Image (cartoon, rainbow, N blue to C red; front, top):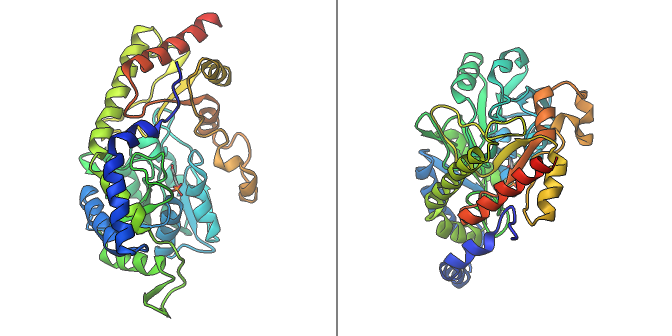
Length: 374
Ligand SMILES: *Cc1c(COP(=O)(O)O)cnc(C)c1O
């Protein structure tokens, strides 16, 4: 059996005709930058995320950058986030000349350990940037409360969490600005790079629209120092097709997650010393962009699975406080033990919507055989 970590080709075959029609429509219009397709997508996704406004941009990384720019984050400012995320979460902060201040993650959810946020706050803290890692929302109630009392902004890195819910509310509507990515491997993935910002604050929305087009509201009159970060019409048209399937695909991911739990339990591995399964917090709807287990002897298990045709991925092998490019932040090994342990134990196994029950059985059997052989 050959089971990749993600197989987008099966999904594409189901919607290939609709995608082709959407692409043809845009080519016929010869409108490629922003335009009506982007506006339609923005409206559909604003509504989906229960936000007043959505603003398309060129990538999830740019969404983070634009969100911080709109909050006037710059030199001398601090932004609190976690070191167990994709690079862009912290890259966006540091690129603006601000300082990334880390707090460790919660061992159960891999999300920000909110009990550590207060002690990381200083007079210079401008914003808190929680990540909804792997498709589950961070503990937003505590984060919002801390931020409100200290007059700080909350920006959600919701790149992996479109459709995820926290106490009945959707990711992207929980802080001041939500940042989404349409990178092909995300739950709503385009045919290239793309991103989106959501907000309920019309003033912030206006600022974000200006910032994504070189800081100009009226062409060639630049009020602010912006960037070029627009969503392509072609991407928007393709994303609008895929958006119609988003909930159905998220349901399939959740069903796969549930089946894994049963299979691991039946194999006697569910909550063993060998394997720990992802934890769903109370009041949260997980969208399983990734199904990440903790595994004993992770690297050898990964190799064992690869030899037997099962693709896995390590998100993330090096916590951000230990990345070479962030060494000026002055952190060292041992500073964030939970993030460092997660980097050694975490292993994403296939969970994509089209994954068959047989394939899942094979994945769990292969993991089981590794520990029996050990
Ligand atoms: C994918 C991702 C990003 C960046 O999105 P791009 O569209 O690839 O730039 C940011 N943060 C997290 C947590 C992500 O998973």
